[in-house]
Length: 386
Ligand code: MG
Image 1 (cartoon, rainbow, N blue to C red):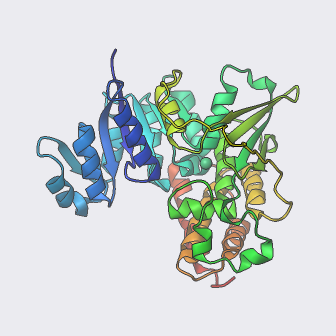
Image 2: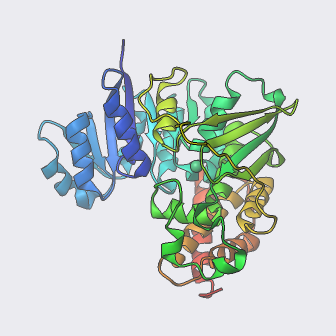
């Protein structure tokens, strides 16, 4: 059987490291055409020496020397942002797994779709920022495929498999509620960075852990779901589910719910996106029913999480507004991590930036980059401790 050729963009982050575990687990099934990271060159080199990719890339040219020195001499290394597009469009690559945090994944993802690749997408910013452009690119290149790697979207993708879209009533995205799910809004005003970083179920990077606590992560995922599954904003609902076992559900037109459940382990979603439509045989931890398995589901308390309202607003108005919501949130999280604003100030910064933005249609990447830059500048200039 011919091996599937996979390029991993962002292999040293939390999703990337899990992707490397999956690729190492199935060496007879996958060949790695490329690995790309930025500053964690020691880890990147370690991954390269184990997986033997055709090319190993650091996007930071200043890190090239360090990378070259650590990667086995017979393996190829390169540096620079433009290498991401090159890896994503290399003729031998079948699947591009994009797990770059932030918006640096935009160009390589669009280029990979244009080149007719399967994109396994973990970088939610790509769909949040440029969902309409991504959909247009998918429609233009019939061979291209876009598969979700986010656990919620992977769950929905699995629940919808083989189903007529007309049967779909709602997508029910589950949210763990993050570190503050049992805190009141007033208690959240006094939350520290340490408090926000203590995620109860998932072990992730700091940005997404803070986003989980503010539910901004869910807001981004709502927009992501809208573009990924081409549904109306009103079809997307959020449920709090502290155990993170039900990764999301779909409600069909007769009122039936279909859910996907597993232990909270990102390898499930990564592996499914790489092997789809097949499933790879059991190598992942099973749910343990020896002790009672409890699954709680509840609507979020109205008004407690402004992030959900931001998402509906961004989805309804579309254009550049989702990109602005994402950019303002990135600045706000950065300010919170530096101790310059309160936790609840994150929402205020996002709200004020979105309210001040003049929405434009998503006509091209330049428009989106400009809106993103405007939002960052505006958000950063807002008074401290808003
Ligand atoms: Mg998720």
